[in-house]
Image 1 (cartoon, rainbow, N blue to C red):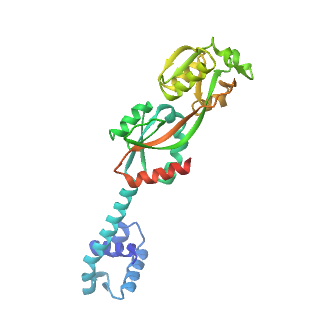
Image 2 (image 1 turned 60 degrees about the vertical axis):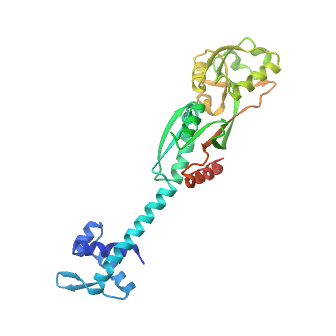
Image 3 (image 1 turned 120 degrees about the vertical axis):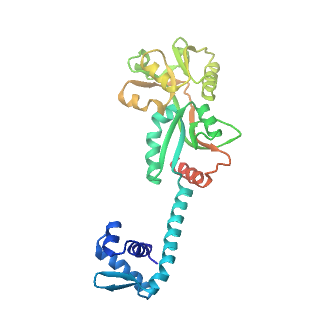
Length: 291
């Protein structure tokens, strides 16, 4: 049974004329008449008496009217319920600052294309802060550098190599390759003290019997990148953080001997037992496909 035909029937009943129903439904009068005729044909009964300019329900039409309202109401209720189950009205994403600046512009268009009616709110902060927001239900899920916590689940979505970057006017920028020993006197800008990435870099220096000259420590890689651009020192940074600057020719990666093979891993995280489990399952699939 065509729900549009039932809707047209109800509007004609409530407004008392096909012309008024057509105006309310933003249809032409012939379109509404055709829907009523189609419904009468499907039911194999006459719903309206048509006498000159007057339109009145037949006895069968009066009997069908309350059923039609129930059918339309049930359809609208089911449609609304399914939308609420599959897509929340607004999704709040907690996101590390560098990811928000550099990766979200690539992720969000694909997410919006898949869920076109989805409203998205972005909350930025340090990865550890985002984890706490996920646990405290302040955001629906997070996109962060690898963080572990017994109350969160995670899915790897992106792995980005770390390289050593200098401004293009730096003396080292003209070299094709540099030995680790030559870095000993260079001022370094390190970000995120105590993180796994930070520890891996320190082990690299220790392995080569080098004590790095850490001139500045910051808690955000975006800050580290901007300080490098200002000529304040060298920094190990993930490629996604410096992609634009490399393309614009303001930063350059230096090849190191021995070469390094470190990656920053970006993960989609959510709280265990998340209430929006149906949508979480869809997002998990989305990020698996994206990866």
